[in-house]
Amino acid sequence: MKPATPLLVLLLAAGLHVRAGEPLLLGARGTAQVAFTPGDDAGALVMDAISRARKQILVQTYSFTHKGIAEALAAAGRRGVDVRVIADRQQMETIATSLVVWLAEQGVPVWIDADHAAAHNKVMVIDNGTADAAVITGSFNFTHAAQFRNAENLLILRGHGTLAEAYAANWRRHKIHALPLGNRRESP
Image 1 (cartoon, rainbow, N blue to C red):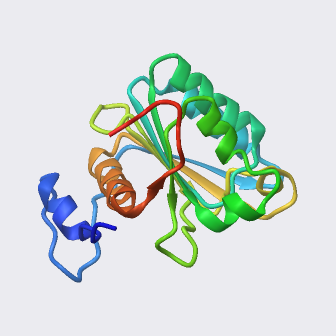
Image 2 (image 1 turned 135 degrees about the vertical axis):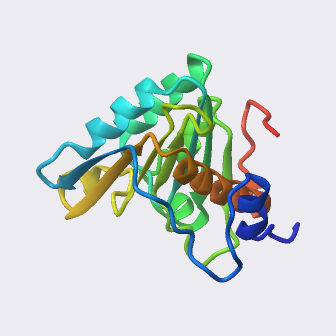
């Protein structure tokens, strides 16, 4: 296993000026869309954001059972969007309804983050490096329960390139130590 590249190194390589041990402070700009479940259709907002992707979608997921979101990611891959997923090992192995293996079967490159007690991120970075970059985050797992049974929150932040790059750099840092899930499509 390769040692993890510190996030600071990745952020500096991306041209972001940060200091070790200090949180990344970003000026507010762009737009923010928010949803709270149950009640708001957070899943529909995620699927809409996926449908708008033109270049790439980087996903970090803890639990993944939301069929509509999984289908939207697979469809994005089929239309040429570079979709990549890092999933939590334990959730994928212990949850019978997990759709992570299904995504891999659809040709979506999947890696398993087994380096942490829980890979608890719930993040999508869409079209990083473009004016339309979006970051999806919050407590909302990409699950049926998060939509219909749990009290969750979802944020979609658009038009903030520095924020999207910070999340993409974090995704790349976790990919370094993640293990491939035997995908049909090979990916660097």
